[in-house]
Each structure stands twice: as C-alpha cells, then as structure tokens.
Length: 386
Image 1 (cartoon, rainbow, N blue to C red):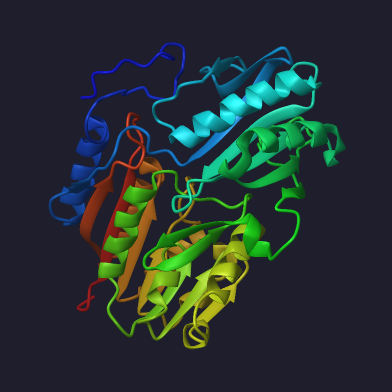
Image 2: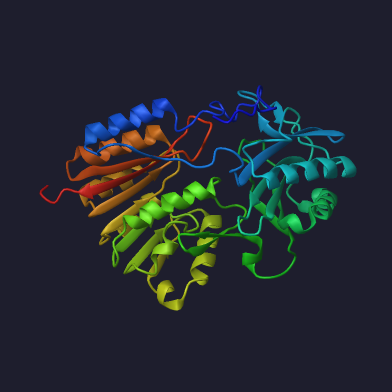
C-alpha cells in the first residue's frame, strides 16, 4: 500500500479504494464464481502502476474567473473538487490544469454555472501522448462557435509552449451531462495533415491514432498487456471480426499475420482514428482489412465466416442481437473484453446457456486502480461436439 496520503480526500470521490492493492475483493469473488460455474478455470489477475498512470482526464470547470475550480464532481452533486495535485494523473495533466487556472484568471474567462446554464468554459479534456509527453487539450465551451474562448486558448498555448500537442475547441451548448458536443475547431496545429491533431500511440507493435473525440484507455501500460494477451489468443492466418473496434487498438496489430480482419465501429471519431491507423500500415496489410462503419447490432452479417471474433463493448455490454448471432453460429473462438462486471456476467450466462460456447479462460486486469472497477478479459471456445 502506498503510504502517502491524498490531499484531496475527502471530498474527492475518485479513489474509493485509495492505496489498496489489487482488484476489488468483491469483484474477485464474483469473477471467481463465474469462472467456477462455467468451467473457466482459475481466475488470472494482472496489475500495474497505481499512481501517476492516468494519461487521460476529463476535468470540469466551475467557480469564478478570479478563482476557478478544475476537477471532478463530488458524489451526487455538481460541486467541484478542485484537483491541483492529483496523484493518479500523469504529471502533465496537473501541469495543464495549473496553466488553465492561470489562463482563466488572466483572461477573465467565466466558468460554467449549471443552475443558470451560464458562463463559457464547461470542461477541459487532456490526453497525454506517451511517446512525446505532450498534451492534447480540448476546451469544452457552452457555445456553438469558438470565438468566446479564443483569448483563453491563446493564453493557454503560450503557457504550455512545447508541452502542447494540439489544442481544440468543442462546443456543447446544451443542458446535458454529455461532456462533448457536436461542434469542433482545431486551434493548434493550425495546418497539416489530419493526423497532426490525433494522439499517436504504439500499441501491439503498430501506430494507433486517437482524435480528440475518440475513446482511449487511460492506463496505457496495462492496456498494452491486455492487447498482448488478446494477440496471443489469435492464431496466425485467422479470419477475424472485431466488433466495437474503436480506433483499432486491438485489431491493427493483427493485420500482419491474419488472413483478414473486419472492423466494425460506429462512432465517427473512432472511425476517423481507425482510418488513420490503416493508412499508416503497408498496402498488403490494408488489403486484408474491411471496415464497416455501423453499430455492431446492425453488422451481425460481419460474423459470418469469422473463425475468431473479438468484442470490446461499452458498459452496457453486448447488444442482444449480437449475443443471439454468436449463439446461433458460434465462432471457433470468442474473445470478450469487458469494462462492466454486471453486463459481463449477464452476457456470459447467455453465451454459455445454449451449450455451444464454453468459457475457457478469464483474466482480471486492475485497469482502474484505487477503485471498485475491473476490466475483464475472457476467452470462449466453441464446443466441437455440440
């Protein structure tokens, strides 16, 4: 257990298991029961760094221009816990937050006020590029055009200097809990290829690109180990379908040794990131790739002929139509990466209930240290005698 106390607890709710080693004991027991009930063998566990690992952060902005607060909401409220020295964040994120506080004060930029739906700056998203250490920064505005934050952007860029990877404006003028809105503008770099504004990460031996609106894992070193394990479960020459493919963190690194991969992804920003990743691969690899930019539940035809299927769904888990298709015509192997234990338990029960798929291996990754959350990786095999 790390003995250094956190200066933000309480009231910060971000680390309910602060300093506790390993995955949540309740999650461990529950996953062990799932493995025992379905023949999945003993539960494997993988952990990594518990502090300074978070490469992505979404920080809300409230307070006044003279004394802004940048952090996360207290539990059950819109009151902000200011986080100037978060030990979970990569140091660059804390640096960006400090520069933003100074820039807000210097420019008189008004933070957002929930009750009145007033003020300009709602949030700041920061993504640190591992290789360069630079920060991709998004300023989220209560506006539908970027003019109101132009002076803040200039002041922030001046303070961050070479530590800045790219600087973006996002417009979210609606009363909503959705952080990002539909409007985008790139301030820096002002010219160049589209990839210039995307964070580039080396994952699974290839470059993967993340535009600012795309999902990415925050604990990259441990996410690398997840991808490494998935790749170890994919035989050379396989025909693969990946549902909920995102920017290609898993599948892009398999193109060099698979017969073909169908990528299914519906989020526009993720599809753009995937296109950048494919463009960076050699022509022979690109020829093995097929992209279906559609929701997984509308692309069950992509499962036909796949020897191996990889799924990495959002918290709600697999769409019922996807489960039904997998049960009706199971692939030889199914790899399931889950970020929610409830939906994973439900989907596992449905997948094995028909008797044609069995859980062969289950590994828990402590991708969210200091919390109750756990990332679960499962390997299912088709019962050849079924």
